[in-house]
Structures are given as structure tokens and as C-alpha cells.
Amino acid sequence: MSNLFSTAAFLDLSLVQIAGVIHISPTYFANLFKRATGISPHQYVIRQRVERAKLLLLKIDLMIADIAL
Image 1: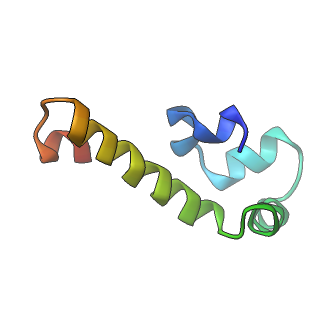
Image 2: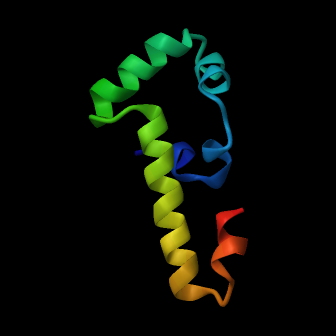
């Protein structure tokens, strides 16, 4: 996955915004993304957020409520 998709900024972008950057429809982008990765963009974002939260819980002395935000 390219660096764009692994950055925190990507996780805050909407499907419409991402598709707009590459000048295609959101539906077409979602279909291409799923074909390439095997999961939907939404599932990818959720997985990335969970992985990031897991790392934060292991490495940083923050409360779970703080990490959830």
C-alpha cells in the first residue's frame, strides 16, 4: 500500500475526497480499491485505526479514552 494510504491524514479523508484527487467517481474508486486490496476502503480505514490504537496502547502512556479520540 502506498504511503498515502498509511498516513493518518488518509484516515480522515472521505471517499469522495480521495476519488476527487484522482478524478474518478467514489463508487469506481471503491470498486478498484476492493479489487486491489480485497477489502473495502472503509474496512481498510477501520483496520488501520485499530492497528494505530494498538501501537499507541503499547508504546505511549495514554488512557484508552484519549487514544479513542
